[in-house]
Amino acid sequence: MEYVIRRKEQKDCYAVAHVVTVAWQETYRGIVNDEFLDNLPNTEKERGERSFNSFDENDNHQFVLEVDGEIVGFVNVGYSDDEDYKNQGEIFALYMIKKYKGNGFGRKLTEIGIKELKNLGCTKMIIGCLEGNPSNEYYKHIGGKFIKTRTFKLPNQELVENVYYYDEI
Image (cartoon, rainbow, N blue to C red):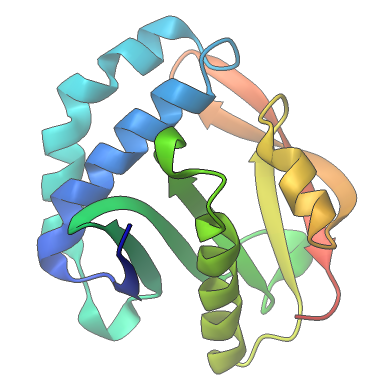
């Protein structure tokens, strides 16, 4: 299995939207309402177009994972917009298609995300993870300290998101 992790390019927007669709459907069934998950394929093209049209190369802190030439995961980082953690880093999204999990790719995406946050001048970060998502254990395993919950809003549903703090990255 050959892989590369590289900075996201504008042409990747549609493939990243597809990863979101697949990863959400695989991970969040039973956590997020079925209607929302079942509608993701219907909104995928629109989400890809919106990302493509708003793509800003100068404000691009996303990296994609390509395995055998196909984008199967990504990480998106930046300055946190959480009021309690302004001017600190945040991993906003870390998604991967299930069949590629367990190969160390999540760790590699996390590491490149942290490197990008350091390049932005961040020394601390947070990560949010929906309650019930098995990835909560991963975030604790890599040193995250549970600090609070916050509300994650979707159409017709509010979910609990666990927030993990890393006081040194």
